[in-house]
Image 1 (tube, helix red, strand yellow):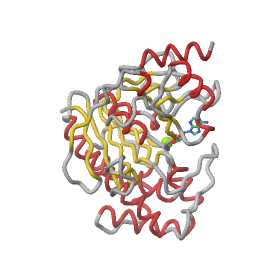
Image 2 (cartoon, helix red, strand yellow):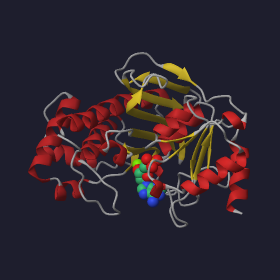
Image 3 (cartoon, protein in one colour):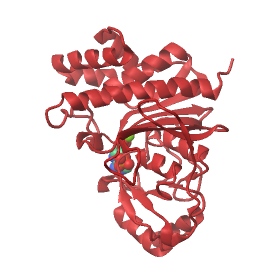
Image 4 (cartoon, protein in one colour):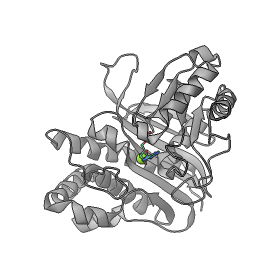
Amino acid sequence: MTPALTDLLVVARRAARAAAAVCLGVLEEAPAAPDAMAKLGKEPVTVADYGSQAVILEAVAAAFPGHGVIAEEGAAHFAEHAGAAGGEQIVRLVGRALGRAVTLEEVLGWIDHRGGAEPFTWVIDPIDGTKGFLRRDQFAVAVGLLHEGEPVAGVLACPHLSLDPADPGSSRGLLFWGGRGLGAFREPLDGSRSQPITVSDVADPARVRVLGSVESAHGDPALVQAVIDRAGLGGGWVRLDSQVKYGAVASGMAEVYLRPRSRPDYRDCVWDHAAGAAVVEAAGGRVSDLDGAPLDFSRGARLEANRGVLVSNGRVHDRVLEALAAAEG
Ligand code: AMP
Ligand code: MG
């Protein structure tokens, strides 16, 4: 029987919340910045990345054991680099998040759970924006759901995002979620009530607010600036880590998230976009690559068929694509 999207989203939201608690627990226990373990490909990874993934996949394995899984981390690297202290910490924090005692073997098993071949695939980035996490800045726990390769639902837990963006002193911790045919919502991470969200209806370029990566190496800031100038986008350019950017566009806090390729051969990872794309589309926005083509999530771990990513409220999408084509000449 095909489960209803709402049932999948109940599990995904609960899992993302528990995962966010693991991440915040690691930050609380770290005197300064949490230790980053060396990782192939040079991206940092911490015990929180593994603990978050373990908690999410524990929930997926229990509720939907036959669903497929694409997840960023693997247990072998943790076992090799975490040491005894890392092992003790992950067992403690995952146990606390799940509300029961767990063993290291169980935790490693959940990290490596990859499920079966049913048409739903869970796409998980346990900490998107690890560099932001290490700076105690923005990061997201991203849980996306593909059905036959298409992003149909997503959850973004954003523990450091202010509930009221106009008031940086307001309490922090937001969860965005949405699904095809269901709309999109935001709710405080503490579990209080959901509110519907939609993308903004701004179409006047002078008011368009643009989002991009903090890390210049994750994109092409010169090209973003050239597009802003050519399209006359006058609402400001804010740099934020992680898929928090998708949540911001989905909830009308910005109109455009532009992610040009950092180098010609770079292909984006599916876990950096699946959850966010589902939430933005459910909120009425549009997601494409820099040629205007839909993102093709059916090619494994990377968006092999796409170059770059453009997310918008829909109203200004074509204008940005035209400016991109002109700027790239
Ligand atoms: P952001 O916080 O939006 O800059 O994106 C964070 C994500 O960028 C990480 O999760 C990585 O998967 C991804 N990333 C790492 N290296 C690159 C690169 N050279 N170009 C584009 N994205 C990258
Ligand atoms: Mg990521």
